[in-house]
Picture 1 (cartoon, rainbow, N blue to C red):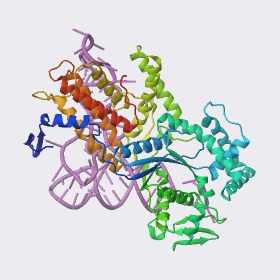
Picture 2 (picture 1 turned 180 degrees about the horizontal axis):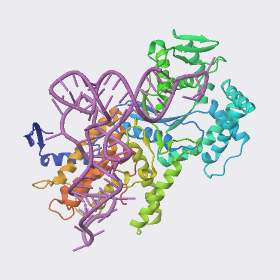
Picture 3 (picture 1 turned 45 degrees about the horizontal axis):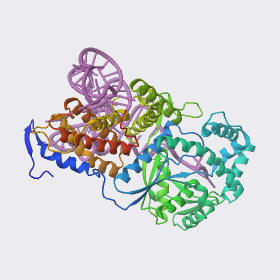
Length: 495
RNA sequence: GGGCCCGUAGCCUAGCUGGAAAGGCGCCGGCCUUCUAAGCCGGAGACCCGGGGUUCGAAUCCCCGCGGGCCCGCCA
């Protein structure tokens, strides 16, 4: 693209700076963007299965857990854009102790009076948990329920799975609000019922690393560089029943029948578990999943704790953000129809939340503060959305057609905008290749900022370079819409 | 006790395959009769946690500390 075009090199204080002449580059670049697949890659044909969220159905999402679906969903959008065939999946833990505890709670305690089902049912779970700790009879009942599930007792399995399903229904509403519902929900109970877990146990038992401690089977991982001396990875209890990771092995074997690559979005507390999973899969000569880990979100007073009542729920955060967007719109756009205003406020609120989470590198923890989370200025989703709406406003009002030669000399803000646009494919490639979602927001912000500068200095409609500038605005609009799309943020035509 | 992650202006973050420290919030001062001011322009503010080492050159790589997070169950 650069061949035969203007390039100028200068020496400045020991550095060799190369200056591009953007004028001859402008038309080809804008034509490429207008063609519609700028930044997208050629299809790879690779089937990627992204597992995200998979939170146990024990209560509503809080902001700490909300990082998972936002990262997972965005990763899916990004890899799809970059050419992969992507499916997302939520692994539903509908057996095991927590699910059995919830089932016990539903049977013995009354739900709270919150209108949303997960918020109401968490009361049952809380009380059941207290009973589990303080009442030996309750503990016995819960463990009995759990074991009956694993032994294939369908009545018990239905009760426990049903309880999880009720709670999950509420949680899924929250995911839908975020725009981060998974494509499929895979139930852990299906693995036990189908015999897949027993297969895994039999196969692992044949491993050279297999050991036995009073009937409980384990893999001896001394040779695998696992932390701590004498590390043993148990895959059955002495009763012969499976453990969580055993079932996870079965789940991954199932996944690999359906995909070429498995990508898991996990909290950093799952690092060791994930490592054990991979070793076990390796023992079975199966592929291993790739993981994206994220650090936890804390509150100014310390970590989030449901028990201590120090939590910020995702639903409350969304309500607050959308409410705030709505009152902003009421002030700024009294002319807008109220249904449209409502829809826009929803988009702005959820967009702002997603953007704020995605801005921070996954492996860095951060402290949640309402005032930061609700800031709609500067480096935020609304900033970029607003620039997109500006592009649309210009295009809506213009009569001319986009296209044509650039002016004899590009304005610095035109050049800056072209430069931002030109970076997009490389940003996509790197973000997708390195699974670095945090590269996307700065790209959106940079593009929006460049558009705003151009908007101030370069009149479009009625200018001598109207055709060219319309093409520039339209190109910006397209790329802006794509970045926002990857972030899961609506790109509004009006704001 | 051991393992992994993080530590950059008052605050939140980028930069970390080594080569001119970047953006936002907040603060100070300007800009709406011109395509939407959720915007734009200007200013103040950082010896990049500390100490060694490698290098012509370190926020970036190595070692030792300090501070914070996470993990180390026949739980999930």
